[in-house]
Image 1: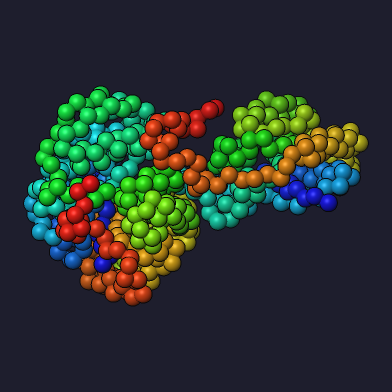
Image 2: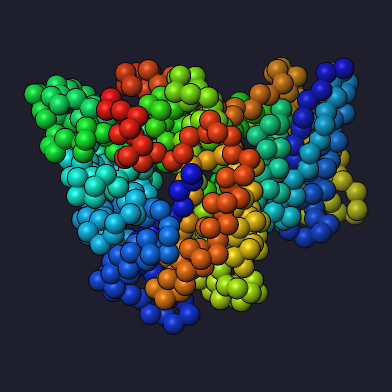
Length: 212
Length: 360
C-alpha cells in the first residue's frame, strides 16, 4: 500500500472549534476515500492558534521559530492540503492569511488543496470562492472544485446535516483524486545550488525566479 | 590565529530608555571612538556597514575608515558590507586601493548586495538583478585589482577600454575579499569560485542558515581546488551584551532589545536568544556560547561582534569593548586554538598574502 502525507491547517480560535471539527471531518473523509483506493495517509494537523505568536514573530524577523518551522515544513512537504478558516469580515481570518504569507511563495505549487471555511450563516460561503480560492491559485496550488462551507445551521441539533456530509465526501473524493494522480512530493532545498558559477558569470542564468 | 573584532551598521536609533536620539554628528563620532577603542583593548578588526538611507549614517565608508586608519596602528579595517550591486566596481577598486595604501595594507572588504528594493534605483539599478549585479561587478573588480590595463564589456556598466584603476594595490597585493550572504547559495558559490572568504551574518538568523551556507561554501571551495573544505576562509557575525552579572545584563539590555530595529516588538529576548546566536549575560556565558559556533561551522578565521546598535549609548558600547578585550577575546583566542588542526589557515592579512605572493 503506498503512502502519502496529508496536512490539515485549521485556523479556528476557540477550543474546541467548529473550524477544527470541519477540518477533522474532511481529513477523515479523505483518509477513507484514499484507503478505498489502496493508499494510506499520514495526517499532520497544524492548529494555527498554537503558532499565533510565532507567525507574527516570523513576519517581523523574517525567520520561523523551530516549532513554526515544523508546521511550515508539514505544509510544504504535504502531498495534499486541507485548509480551513473561520470567515471574518467576508474573508479568511488574519491568522490564516499570515500563516500562508510566511510560507515560501513556491512551496504550494502543484499541491492539491481542499479549501473550507466556517461561519455564522451560509451568506458568508462565497468567501471561499472570492478569497481562499484566488489566494491558493496565486500560489499555483491545485484547488479542488468543491470548497466546503459549514454554517451554524449545518451543525444544528448536534448532528451534521446530510447535505454537509455529502459536500464533505465529494470534496474529499476530489482531493483524493488529485493526490493519487501524483508522485510523492519532493521538497526543494532552499540552500541547494541550482546553477554553476560559469552560468552565472555568462549572464545566461535568469536574474531571479520572478515568474509570477 | 583567529581574528576578533566588531562590526557596526551605523544606525541612528533613539535610546529607548531616555527617548534621546543622537545627532548624526554624535553617532559618526561615536563609531570612530569605538574603532579606536577596539584597537586599544586588543581587538583585531573594525568593520563598517554601508547604507544610503536613514536611519543609517555610513554612506561613505572609505572616508570613515581613512580616518580610523590615521588614528590606529594595528587595527584591520573592513566593511560589513560593501554594496557590490549598486556601487560602481571601478570606484570600489580605486577607493579601497587608496585606503589600502593609506592604512599600510590593513584593509579587507566584505561584499554584500543590500536588501532594500528602493535603494537600487537611486543608483540606477534594479534589485531583481541583485545576484547578477553581484556576480558581474565583482568579476570586474577582481580584474581591476589584478590587471594593470583592462578592456571590459558587460551588462550593467559602460564598457572600459584601456582602463587602469589607480592607485594599483599596495605591493601588487589585492585586498582580501569576503562575500556575505544570509541565504543565497549563489554567493557562497561565488566566494568558493574565487577562493575568497565567506562571511555569515549570523545575528538576525537561526544557526541552521549559517550551517548550511558555510557547509556549501566549504564544499565548493574544495571543488574549485583552493584547498580542503576545512581550509576555506570563514567569518561569522555575532551579537552580545554583557555585564558581570548575567541578570544585570538581561535587565539592562531588554528595553534595547524590545525596541530594536529588525526584531523589536517581535519575539521575546528569551526566544530570540534561543533561536539565534544572540547572547545576553556574563562574559563567561558569551565565551561558552561563542565556542559552540565552531561545532557547526568548523574551525574558522574571523569572529565579529555587533555591540553598538538599537540606541545603546556610547558609554555602554565602550564598556562592552572593555569586557570583550579584557575577559572574552583572550579566552576565545586560547580556546579556539586548542584542537585546531595545523593545516587550517590563519585569517588572511596583507602581510601573509604578500609573503604568499598573491597578486593574481
